Length: 268
Image (cartoon, rainbow, N blue to C red; front, top):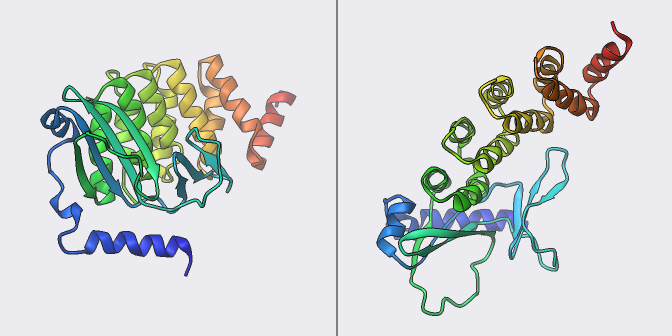
C-alpha cells in the first residue's frame, strides 16, 4: 500500500473515531479563542489536498503543468514528503494572533516549554478553511497574508467564494488581495475564470490587482482562459493590461494565442 493511501486512511480513521479531538473542537472563531487564551498557541489540523506534501517546514504542491512548486523556505530537503495532515499553529500574545506556522505531516517535535496550548484537534477541512478565511478578514495584516495558504491546502474545501470576496474587498490590504487572486488562479472552475476576467476588467480596482488577475488567468491554462486574455489584449483600454495579456499569451502554446499575436503583428 502506498504512503499516500496509508496517510489518507489514518486521517479518515482519526476523523471518524469516537471521541476524536475534532468532535470536541471549540466552536468559537479563532479570534475569539485567542482572546480567551490570552497567551500561548492555538493548534488545528485537517486533511491536506492530494497534490500537496510536506517535509518539516517545507511545503510542495503540484503546479498546473505537473511540476512541484516549493512554497516554504527550508531548502534542506533530506526527508520523505508526507501527504498529510496540514498542521497550523497560531501564536497568541496579549489575546491576539500574532504569528502563524503551517506544515504538513507529523506533529512538530519542538518542546512547548511553558506555553499554553489549545489544540482543536483534527477538523473537517471545510470547517478549518472557513475559520482561517474568517481570520483573513479579522486578523492583523501580517497574519491575514499567511492564512490563505493553509486554507488552500484543505482537502476538497470550497474556498473560491471567500477568496473572490477578499480580492474585491477595498478594506483588505493589497498583499491579502493579491494573495487571494493568486490562489484563485489555481482553483479550477468556470466561476473562478469568470471572476478573474471580471476583476481584470474592473476599472475601479488597483492596477496591480488587475495585473495579478491576468497572471492568474494565464496560469490556469484551461480552454476558457485564452479567449479571455485575447479579449483583454484587444479591447481593454489600459495599455499596461493589454501588454500584460499579450505577454502571457506569448508564453502560451495554444494555437489560438499564436494566431492572435500573428494577426496583431501583421496588422490584419
